Length: 422
Image (tube, rainbow, N blue to C red; front, side, top):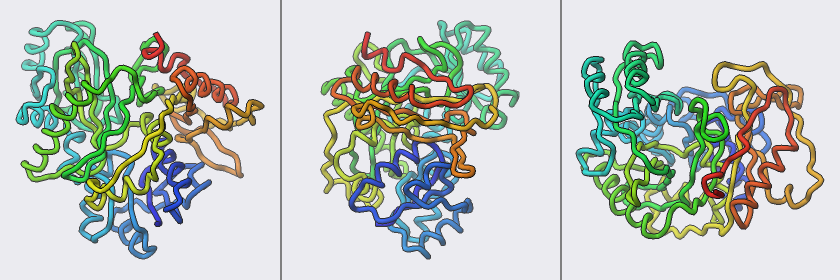
């Protein structure tokens, strides 16, 4: 099987790495890929969806996997399906679950799926009136795609009003913020739950926890994610059952009933409040960095999971998962997430500890290849992934791997998975 992966980040690198070890896979392509994906695939520089579909047909590629949210929201799956190509991802209509916070919140309301109290508005007075009715903290969200950064958790009414004003004026997120959602803050703990869907059936992957804040102790600004771990001990069979019955099942039924069956990855941000799951948000793709820890936990061939989802055959698939734990630590560039940083050469020392080498790997994200040398050129540069028989063992191995990697200005959190190790 030949496979094309759309995207260029650590998520796409990790999918490619998993598929490169899959006996069913003959050749991998990346569009566009990054400076390290050519280690196990061919990078191509085609961006137009029709041209990509033509490339897939001309090269007899069996499956395309779409990694990021932007091409999904822009309709790449619809283009590929119009050419009768196998593609893993959600349609343009279904991708509104992530592409529009307003669509998502109203979908939850229509289908009686538990979520926080909210309003949607383009009017600052309506926003301010609702803000005054809430207790702090208060959540303010831009409607459109903001690369995971369009959510402000305000600790005062004044901060919430300023966030709403900055979004509605276009100052914060441009057109993505000119409609907003204001909602109550939920006090609980957060889980990332992933369902692989084919429109009718689904498979649940191990629940994960992401660390969004830049600094230790969950301080500093929100980022695209500074690390993650899975499976989390903060979920049990009873909670999985509640999530399936109250969230996943009615979501897939609602999408079918409304005329856009959901296919691809349904990423559900769950807040658990007093043992009850409440939906914070949907994404229509793997989380990044959650994908980097879920891929190595798949024991069965990942190609089968993606292909059967793309061909509406998940009911005939049994997936096998590892009993291990996975922890990843994001290494970011000097000025992330505030501004871009100067390119810096990445030096990777060969660890003298064989146990660390055998139980860790690096997933590359914001990197460029020049003269056979890798340079850090993006905000989130790479991820160190550790596996182990416990969360602590996996975390320690991931941090041991971090010690082998050097580039000017590197920074990373030192407390990933702390919630599970309290």
